[in-house]
Each structure stands twice: as structure tokens, then as C-alpha cells.
Image (cartoon, rainbow, N blue to C red):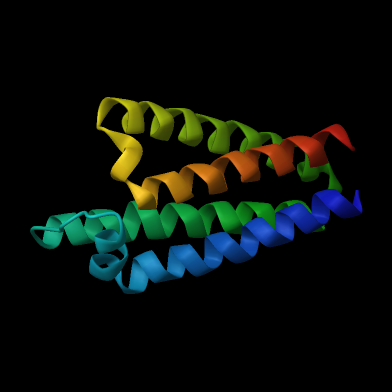
Amino acid sequence: MLFARIVLLIQIAALVVLGLAYFIRPEEMASFSGALLMGNAAVTEVRAYYGGLQLGLAAYLAMALMRLDLLRPALLLLVLLYSVLALARAAGLWLDGGTQQTFNLYALLLEVVSAGLAWWALRGL
């Protein structure tokens, strides 16, 4: 159970930092992946989806740290989310010529490792 809590703590920290960064500096964060936000609606979308969604997920994971009955569902959610993100990113790399997409290759590595750690923690419960 300690390993599961450590995995959640790491995920919470990463999601809070990234969520705040996307909420506070959406243009700069989007530019890391080569995205260009062309109008106010696009900036708001990045703030809400990339910032808000990550902060909301971090809040749920924080609740799971305090309530043992949420620990298993939180880890399962992480396994599913990161696995689907990794599969979608891998498909995008294949479809869009991924050998030159350094940002997406690093993001894929992070997603695969995160899914694997969450799966390992889930199996240990």
C-alpha cells in the first residue's frame, strides 16, 4: 500500500505542476508541442482542458490518498487514462511521422511509465 501511495503522490505533484502551468501560461505550454493558439477561444480551451482537467484529476487522486476505498479506483483510472493516452499518442506518431517529434516521444515514455507504475501499484494491493 505504501508503493501505491507513493505512485499517487508522484502523479499528484506532476498533475498539479502541469495543470497550473497550462492554466497560467497556456501559450507557452502549448508551444512546447508545436501548437500555436490562434485566438482567445483556443487559449481558454487549453486553460480549461489541459489545466483544469489535470487539476481535477490531481484533486481526485488526493482524495484517494485520504480515503482507502478510493485507492484502487484511482489507480485503475490512472492505468486506463495513461494507457489510452499512450495508445493514441503512438497512433498519432505513426500516422503523423513521429520520428522527429521529440516532445511526443518523451510524452509517450512518460505515459507508458506512468501506466506501468500504476498497474504495478494496483497489482500490489
